Image 1 (spheres, helix red, strand yellow):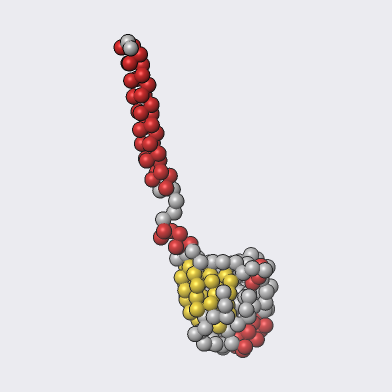
Image 2 (tube, rainbow, N blue to C red; image 1 turned 120 degrees about the vertical axis):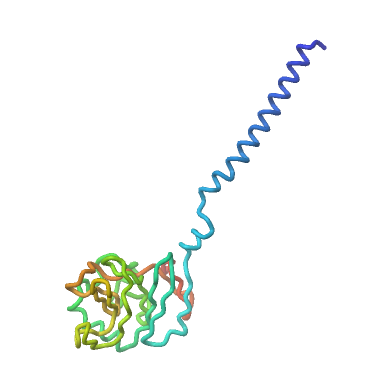
Amino acid sequence: MSNDVVNKTRRRVLTTATTVVGAVGVVAVAVPFVGSWNPSAKAKAAGAPVKANISNIEPGQMITVEWRGKPVYIVRRTSEALAGLQKTNDLVSDPDSEKPQQPAYAQNATRAIKDEYLILLGLCTHLGCAPMFRPDVGAVDLGGEEWQGGFFCPCHGSKFDLAGRVYKGVPAPINLEVPPHAYESDSVVIIGVDQEA
């Protein structure tokens, strides 16, 4: 065998080996790089649905849970509170919830899947302050006899009834938002998942 044949064979072996090692190196560098584009576990958890146990909420009480870094208010309304919603129809700007701040399954008189439970994002639709839960009917500082209970935003004075509907003549332009939610059972609601029709 001549040296030319040996050199050509050696050259092919070295070229092939270098190509294979180079390809393996590119894959080794690319996999973590491409993997870094995926959201972290913390980011995935921040957007994940949240389960809330509602079995211990007494009638007239509210609890707050966190979903996507935002407060979600869950209120268990009394039969008196539900009856009071009729009294505020003429006082609120969007009594029929025609503007889209709620899923279709909550676009009704109580803005809820189950009338007893109100589920809202706890952020004022004016500038995002957290409205205070004020269930006290007839509160003098909120309108006296017209006030049937609801939410008051201390930042700029916006008022919402116990369906999260915004009163007329306040800075907030629209009703409080109803987040997507579904009932897993009578005692557990999942925030962040749409109720199946």
